[in-house]
Length: 221
Length: 221
Image 1 (cartoon, chains in turn orange, yellow):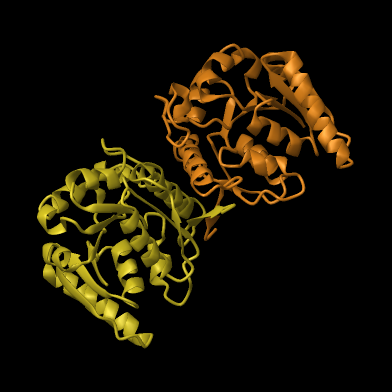
Image 2 (cartoon, rainbow over the protein chains, first blue to last red):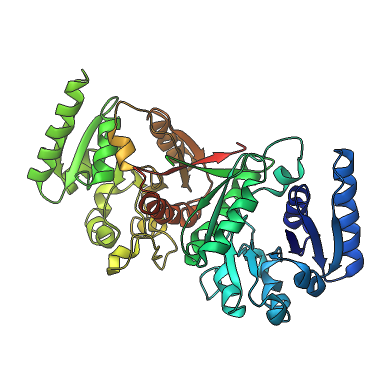
């Protein structure tokens, strides 16, 4: 499967690239092709040290979006709409994974505070702009530091929601390829309103308790 | 310590009564004294079967509030303000524990959807009405069914937040008396905005996956 990660040069996107490049062709997207190529090279080198010959390339966001079977949006909240509105046609019919979190940093406030978009969640905002894409929400609560630490499993659950059952299943399977991760089906896309705001709580815990990367597990399931 | 649980005849309050009555004097509060007394008798009988001679009584909410050193508000969201506004003087200076969740059932919608109060969270709404009380937010994400199952530990974390550090410490210690529970300090009272909305997600998981009582654990801490 070809996995495109738009904004894949950022922490979260980079961590996901590292994990997905073990099994898939990964296309890192960025506003500038050069930055994307640098990140792709970094991923290849890190995996080479682990004895993995990964197929990772870097492209401009639009070209990356064209290539991907699954397209992950790893974009800052405040640049999400401006980035995807130019990709509407390219993303038509595709599985688009929204991993964005509505942090109040978008308006210069704290990362420990959510700032909800009018649509209720980033994922619903994305679905509104990409009417013909199959938007799935996932990976918001997984620590980028844990993703980058390839020597250890990522000890957390990935909460997944979306309105297209088949697309959701594809993303859940992708999530469970990450060692240690359990994917949990949380239902419709609107559940992303809750899933997304858990991240500022985890950021708070990271700061308050000096943690590397807090995550969550659901008990009783 | 005397622990008063207003609305202690409801599921969540009743479950907490059972757990706290092992170590503390518990006063169950209700709108009607008779209902409170019935619930208190039920708690005493259940614990008696486990060989515990518990000190549990039932009183009207106001009298229960007077008695408690710590007063837990186990009230339906939509009746919270009307109940506590008559208790302002009684609760002056006391530790008040907000366990309420802003469920959309308050307006006849689903329990899987949050409906935030203007103050941002139920705990902040309570603090606004009880200016001189030390409001601590806790116990929202702990399953009443797990609490009632005295033969097994409650496998979850209790997320605690509040602006009074000492009051928060008291509530965290109380939480950790419940076997299996780990209390996690999540910072200021405003963090309750996130903690409270996790509950409708857990309700969703209970329904979707036919669970007895989902909970959460923080990983990496």
